[in-house]
Image 1 (cartoon, rainbow, N blue to C red):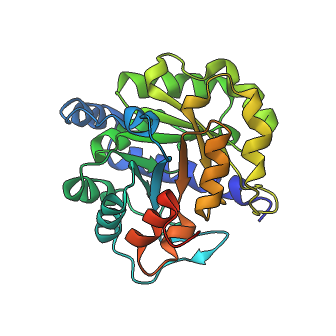
Image 2 (cartoon, one colour):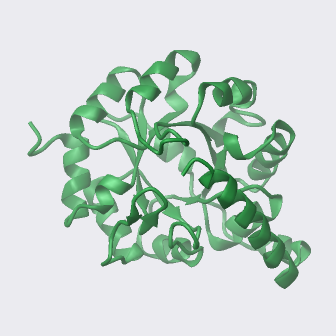
Length: 271
């Protein structure tokens, strides 16, 4: 698993090249210009809450867990998340490693009023236009996948396209690299995600967020990702000033995801 990110990025470069050959960028840009204004993902995730704002993830599989859910219906899952109190939806669109699909976003948005994050490995401006056309309200940018110049370019373009960015870091070095660019070029379009998954071992440690939180000046834009399983985890993060979490695998493994997300937020049945 140590080289999985490198493998994914190499495959993603090939996918983007193939997509450009099928639909040139100028045609995609024209389509993006005709799409409806995105829903406000930033506002949904940073709104004041007595508990915590949950970005609930629609994910069928992952490299670390394999197949997570056989009875996978992205619309039914997103509907249950909405009923259970999710603030926003995250949707995996990578096909090869996560068995996702870009078409899920539009289907989910037709069924629920929540804003939707496209969670993929975005390395090229083409993918931002692609996200906009697909109906995404937000996109994930992973610091470990991008050099500084490319990251800045993507942040600027995302803002021009009115897409919220969830800027994700896994390691302290990455946080130090991106810290000057958090909120650039517009503060209302950028969230900072701290992913608790170690990219080498693929294990998760909730305390990773708590160790890095003091390095972030504005905790209101923080999202803790991966390894969040119980209401106690949520309480611990909330006490540290973190207002949002992204939860996928744990919810996707539950037979009743609506009840599972409600218990995660409110603690019912968990003591």
